Length: 76
Picture 1 (cartoon, one colour):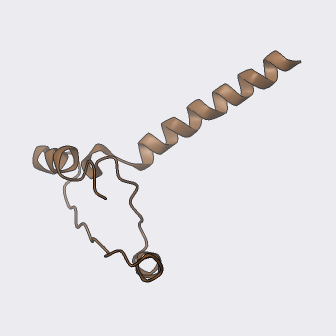
Picture 2 (cartoon, rainbow, N blue to C red; picture 1 turned 45 degrees about the vertical axis):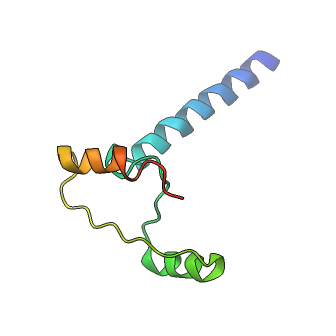
């Protein structure tokens, strides 16, 4: 019985990793971005951190991908 439970946990973890990769395209780097401006303003007010608004029009564009890979990779 322990083996099927472990297998289910491993599969669920793999699915979560795949869905996270899909939700966060390469164009935005490895930063977890929010999609709701009002929520971002609330988080900013609570944490004292500024809000960065990223307008991105052409997914897959080599310049946008480079920006995500080199600039947005490690925002802090």
